[in-house]
Length: 157
Image (cartoon, rainbow, N blue to C red):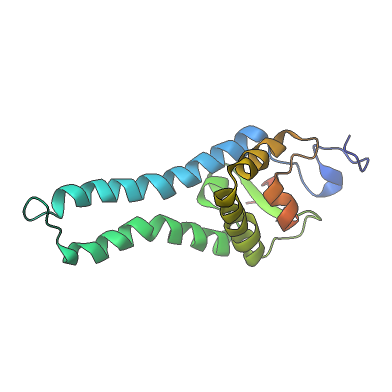
C-alpha cells in the first residue's frame, strides 16, 4: 500500500505502474538510439570527410548534422504523436499525469526531459538521485514529481 492508501500496483484505477525493468529498458532504448546514431555518424564523418590529412569537407557537414540530430527529432515526434518515446512504445508503457489523464507534450519535453537534463548537468548528484527514486514506494523519479507524472503499463492499443 502507498502512503495515500492506494494499491501501488494499480493506483486506484489509474493504471498499473510500469516496473523498474520496463522503465530502464525504455530508457536504454531511447538513449541508445539518441547517442549511438550520432556517434556512428561522427565515426563515418571522420573517415569520409577528409580529403587530405587534417582537412574536413564542409559540404558533408550539413547531411551529417541532419543524420546526427535525426534520433532526437524522431523521439520528439514520437512524444508529440503517440505520447510515448520509441522505447516506451516498444515496451508498452506510457507517461500519464498522476491523476491518470494524458500528459501534455510540454510537460514531457520541458519538465521531464529538458529541465532534468539541465539540472543533471549542473549537479551530477541530481541525476543519481533522480534514477534512484524509482525504488521508492511510489516508484516516481524526481522528474516524475516535477512533471506530476507516473509511468503506467499500456493496456489499450
